[in-house]
Image (spheres, rainbow, N blue to C red):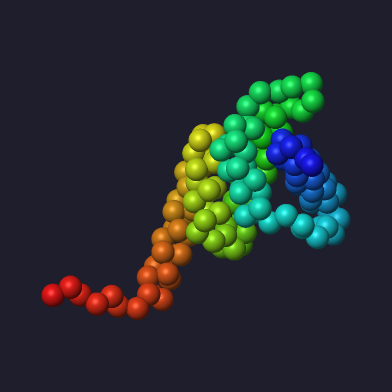
Amino acid sequence: GYRHDTVFKTVLQEVLHEHSELQRARVLGEELPKVRYSTADLVLVAFAMLRLKLYRGNTSWFRWTDRYQELVNSIVYRLEDPQELARLGAEPLAAAAFVLGRGRRGTVELYKAMYDRMMRLLESASDLDEPQPRDC
């Protein structure tokens, strides 16, 4: 069986490879490759890495700090796209806020957009709720 750090190393390498391929295609004006990992996937991986303390320290086996910073940079880049932000659900959005806040990353405009998105999600969820019976 794999250890959890081996799984995270593999996932992180694949995610960062995909990000570099997307960046390369954008710079060269080529057709964008199909995205395998959504922004929600990236955010949940980063959140789990924070919880497992896999965001700090470099070893001869893997450069955790450097790769985690690259992951956070790719999350910020993706979240700055309004269409990408609009696809995010409440749980990944909350995880993104935690990850970016913990790393002191992002811009004021990004934070405002994330807040607006969360408010829209909460409002739409409350619209779906049925009225609760009142205690007498």
